[in-house]
Image (cartoon, rainbow, N blue to C red):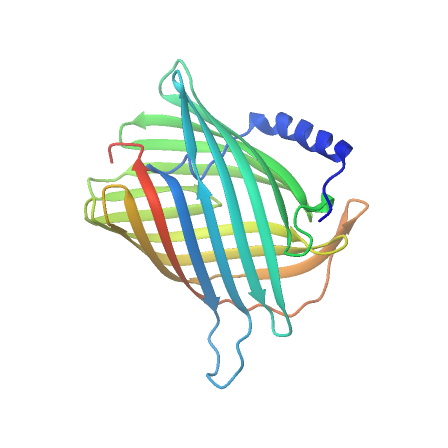
Length: 295
């Protein structure tokens, strides 16, 4: 395994320090905090039963959130690991990701406003080149929340990441709306939006969710895989205890696009590759969840 040079580490952490003026937005935009989580996802398009298996995706993600209270503010430390196996028609490729996120949620004197800041450092690559120099990424965002009343919050901000296909910038617009005692709408567009209905409050909850993800992984050399994966799904949360949640999800990808490319001299070129069709997905997750609001 080749480790980054000292100069690259210096540049990397200087960039990380600058980006500490940004925010994590998904973990801090929900009416609960998942302190620990592990999920497994399987995706498979429709196919003839006599055909060999192809175009399947197996993904495992695990993370923990460590919250620290500092006066009226919170510091959140989040290490995350991901194992992604993608079977194209002619090959099986294994990708790996490790990220460390530092988030700071600041409460302003005007208690209707708070702002979350985050810095993200990580390595996205294939199994054989994980943590090499050119697999490092850094990013961050900033997300401000305006509390209109105890049932309605508006969120807006900006996200950016140094993807392998080039700088990736997204404006963020979100909501956290307690429609009634059983119905919640929350999320940050264009990343995700979730409608939650508490079928049996505190025991059995159902959700409809739309998730959108754009990420890149370094392949050997200067090439990369860009993933644009969008999921429309139903989610059922079973509260085994007050804090331990077993989640089952089923859905389908929408306008999914996996493509290989190379970036040189600030220009990105994509290659003609085999089409990865949209697919059905199944996901199981286990969470240690803590409510962050009275909803």
